[in-house]
Amino acid sequence: MGKRVIPCLDVKDGKVVKGKAFENLQKAGDPVKLARFYEYEGADELVFLDISASEEGRQTVIELVSRVAEEINIPLCVGGGINSPELMEDLFQAGADKVSVNTPAIKRPAFIEEAASSFGKRIVVAIDARWNPDLNDWEVYTHGGKKPTGLKAIEWAREVESRGAAEILLTSIDRDGLKDGYDLELTGAVCREVSLPVIASGGAGTLEHFADVLEKAGADAVLAASVFHHRRFTIKEVKDYLQKRDIEVFRNG
Image (cartoon, rainbow, N blue to C red; front, side, top):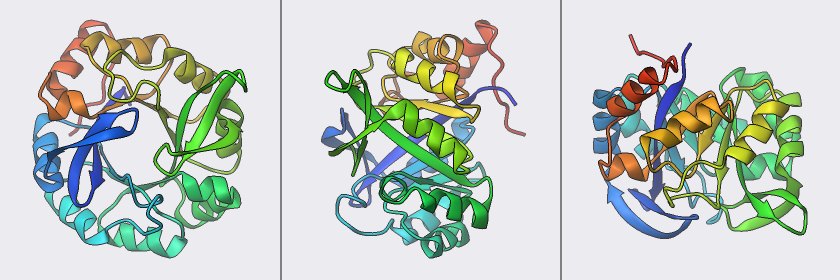
């Protein structure tokens, strides 16, 4: 299929936001307009994350998801506060192609199996992790990176695969928004342990960073937000650079 380049819309209070390490969020634009723009730029997919839904104990804003879905033809993955098959069905009806779950899956891992049984290969599990020296491992966090779980990221990734997830969206909290590069150690460790496609997230700052996490860590896709929102470079520039590095990229159409 080739490697995918995926922009991410982190949405809070109806606006796209971006911060560092999940903190100090600043507004970055309108989700509907950005979705339209990224499809025009050549994005392979779009991820829409309602980043405060779990923390605030509410469901993803379906009306906004519907408005975004109406503007694009590329696959749309939606995450944030998705805690029931009924809500998943509503999101699919609103135009989502995939759903991403995190907090509810950790609270009740059987939720992944139930969702996969009902909706097949449309279930993505998001793993937000950061290094914990006490564990001597990467620890999984929930509620938008606010709550540590005690779970080791590699062990959780293996369990996620065994329970039927179709993909893993792996975010390094430590690298998020810093533009210092993806966490190659974390991403590589997860990619070596699972056969699922892994989407690498957190840390893109240069074109080389995209290539490194695909070549050196084995990611199947790269996700980024601020470098695209702030026009540091375009999706086309990323794909052209990857091809020059002899990395096969996915081509829409």
